[in-house]
Amino acid sequence: MSTYKNLLPSLPDWGRCGVMGVVNVTPDSFSDGGGWLDPGRAVAHGLELVVQGADIVDVGGESTRPGAVRITCEEEIRRVLPVIRGLADGGAVVSVDTMRAEVAEAAVDAGARVINDVSGGRADPAMVKVAARTGVPFVVMHWRGQSAGMDDLATYGDVVGEVIGEVERQMSVVVSGGVDPAQVIVDPGLGFAKTRENDWSLLARLEAWASLGRPVLVAASRKRFLGALLAEPDTGRPRPARARDAATAAVSALAAAQGAWAVRVHEVPATADAVRVEAALRETLA
Ligand code: PMM
Image 1 (cartoon, protein in one colour):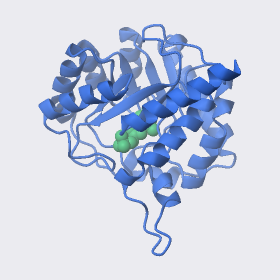
Image 2 (cartoon, protein in one colour):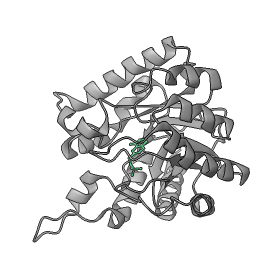
Image 3 (tube, protein in one colour):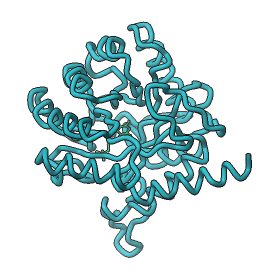
């Protein structure tokens, strides 16, 4: 996985690890919730992320934070569609972060060019058909169940082998449902049914994902394992989410060095620099 190769011809070839900037149009995401519920502000923020160096802007309307309760489909569509339309009209490459087929289909109609389904097609039985019909790149993330109960599902023997194996099986499911294997992006799903030790093990062995032969998306940004790493020494209190961006950028460089196709982050400038540092080193060695 250490040689960069563009495997998704419908997207621009960045020639390095890409940067996916996040716009959560939610009141309650743990990392940036509440800031971008107004569509105008959300579009302006997404376009600012592009100026800062985001190659893709990922728009989500439903929080997947641990314990999150689901919203209705109508509410999700109401939140994300105007933002996706505004960003696509503004020239951004947009992905939609959704587990619902209806939202994904409407989003692609509105200009989204990637479907980022954290359940990899498992939460909504109609999703695979939408991914197949639209033909856009489709993220198959490792997922064991909805956020409300996912922490109880973090039981593994060999976490790296099991997570890759489960994603490989889900890839077969989506391909049997009509998705072209060339559409698939894989993702270890850091923090989803994972302990912090699981997250570190997965990050340490990203190169093992080369066996799947598909681009790997890594989303470590502001997650709990970074909060725990940077906890206050005296109290053990986790570092607040918005103070985890320097650590996130460090992870971005290390993921890029292991061949990640893209990293998904809330704060773009530091990661945009980090992936360029990694690319310069890679080119120097080539
Ligand atoms: N994590 C979150 C949301 N969307 N998408 C992908 N592909 N991979 C992830 O790990 C992922 C995701 C949760 O983080 P957020 O609520 O801070 O955006």
